[in-house]
Image (tube, rainbow, N blue to C red; front, side, top):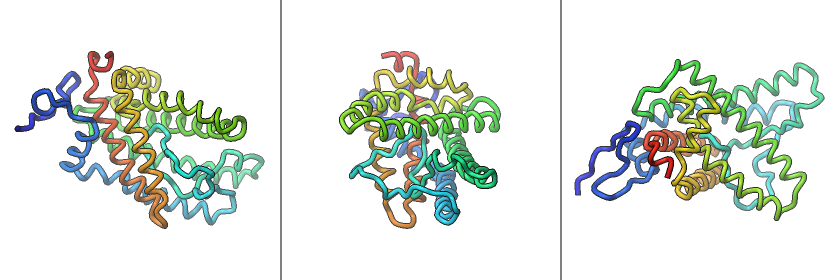
Length: 266
């Protein structure tokens, strides 16, 4: 059976052949195979984050090694395309610092956000067949705002869950958390398409209706893959960012393109 061409325009077909739906992940792999340049932004981002890991290990501010975790399996998912770094910096480590150290610590975190936001903006824009809305700078700044908001919210939530609730309550809280991850899955692509943050979240919610379980499977798969690749010694940051970040970003673009008012409202 011959495969019908994919119509990427809003309202276009997301089926190949007659009566055979094609998953967003399959379309993503096909798009990456046809355009390997889509990997480049997150490869560069992975190298930059690897360098930031090295700097964090050698600067005087406290860091949190990735190995320090009580969980045997981790779904490393934060709501936007990224990878898993070998080090992290808790917000509490920036409290009561002298100004030079505070500026240095904040600068490293801002650089990390801009690196991931730039990679996501470029990859999603290239992955979208239709022209993206707004100027490149406007799209980048809007995407930076989305990444920073997700990152701060996730850090605060993680700290609250870790400090204030037990294991059972934490597991219960995972249900609404993953429900939110599913609904905001396509938000980065709507941001790159020119929507504002609030509008992008609303559009993502509509685009993922009727696709909840399939999007949840993608969220878990990306989170597990990022965590596993992040465990690779020395190059884990580069691998998780380059591979998972790229595939996640293109999948977000595909989900945004295959969403129509009729499909998203089911």
